[in-house]
Amino acid sequence: MISGADPRRDMLSLFDTCIFPTHTCFDDALDYLALRLRQDRRAAAKLTLVHGILLVPEGPKVGTPFAHGWVEEALPGGVVVWQDGFIDLGGFEVPLAGGTLRAERDLARVTYSTPAVDWREKMRLQKDTRYTVRQAIAENRRSNNFGPWVDEYRALCGKGETFWPEATS
Image 1 (cartoon, rainbow, N blue to C red):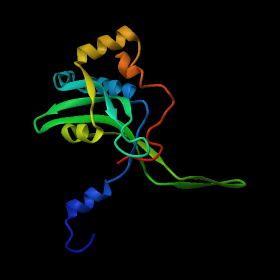
Image 2 (cartoon, rainbow, N blue to C red; image 1 turned 90 degrees about the vertical axis):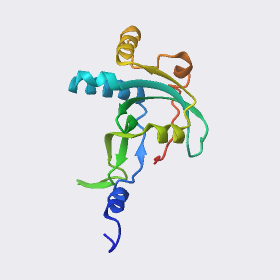
Image 3 (cartoon, helix red, strand yellow; image 1 turned 135 degrees about the horizontal axis):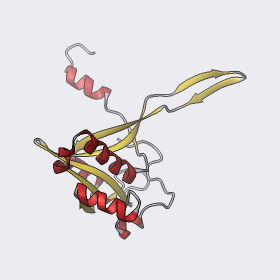
Image 4 (cartoon, one colour; image 1 turned 30 degrees about the horizontal axis):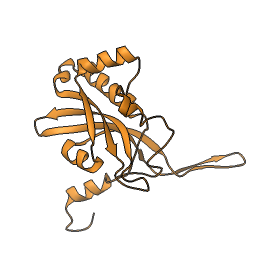
């Protein structure tokens, strides 16, 4: 730590890292909802599954619409968005017979939250459909999939396109 520096700021910079998308957001969101309900069924009152259309916030495809799924939780301090991603823990090398296996990235899956107001602004939310826990379970059973369940959102999925070949922060 730099002498005289704010230790809280140093800790924040430690966690100021890039988060890579999973490209399985609809599955991730419903899985997270199910996990939270297994932990405490009373959480249903403060959790909402959300599917929506956002605009790519940065990079070569900035402004391109895409479908996304996430969970929102109403907390005393405000609403937070929960979603999954991958963080880069750094590369690694493994010595093997006849050479070395090298990877530039060592990704770890994480579930993280961020204040909903900030997230919506950064991700440029265009449209959303909100589901109570009961509605999400009913849609999952009806469709036999994790979503999206709205045709307009589904049309933006599954084209094999990735919007962030590199990390987003």
